[in-house]
Structures are given as C-alpha cells and as structure tokens.
Image (tube, rainbow, N blue to C red):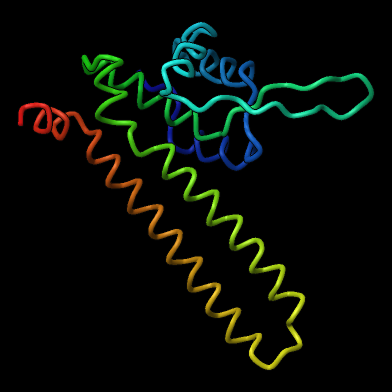
Length: 171
C-alpha cells in the first residue's frame, strides 16, 4: 500500500521545506503508485485530517498565488490511508489519532521562530562577554526542543498504532 519509502519522504521534506502544492502532492502519490484523488485530498482537509493550504504569491508579474500545504501532509496522508486499510473509519481517525498532530506541528513552528529570533539577537550581541555562554544555552535549548517534539510525535505514533487504538476503544 505504501509505495513511498522513508528515504523518499525524507528527501521530499528536505527538498520542499517550504511546502507542496496540491498538484505536487497528487503527482508524488501517482508516481509512487498510491491512489489519491484531488477530491480525497480536499475531503481530508475539510474533515480536519490535514491542514489547510496557505496562499503563497508567485514571483513575476500577474502570476497570482497558489495554495501550498506543509510538507508534513505526505506522512499524514500515508498514515490516514494505512489506518483506513486497517479498517478504521474517518471518525475514529479524527477522534482517536490525529488529536495531537496539529498541536505538535504548531509547537515545532513556534520553537523554530523562537530559536530564529534568539540566534539573530545573539549574533547581534556576539561581542558581549556572555555571548558564548548564551550560544551554548540556546544550542542546549534547541536540542531539548527537538527532543520534546520527537518524543511527543513518538507518543502520538504509538497511540495511533492499531493495537493501541483498539485497547483505548475497548476501555
């Protein structure tokens, strides 16, 4: 079912860090042999299983804008499709599985913004005596932030595993 391997997903996330258009998403799945239609993509967004696209202007005169989805939608779509193949309903997926995903992504984006600002401020004050200590503290905080996001993602993944969901639903 999953015709997109981890190496490919990592490459896509690296190459398209700014996001993917719906056409790019559909092409990726089509070339990988995973069935996904534009209607299904829209339905997942409408149901809150995927984030909405953000309008981004195109360079050049009179080029307009296009909708761009965060690159994380590739993993989310694959997870949704796998769960549906495991006989989960859309409602079970919405209720039991994806309850944390958007919050984790928002936390990650907030931490990125904080560390970008901190790095800029530290760079501006690099001549101050305490600058090196602050740089070490910022790097340590970044590592803690990455670890937190990774651990929360791991918890969410374990909760979304079929056996975990069945135990939760049974209780």
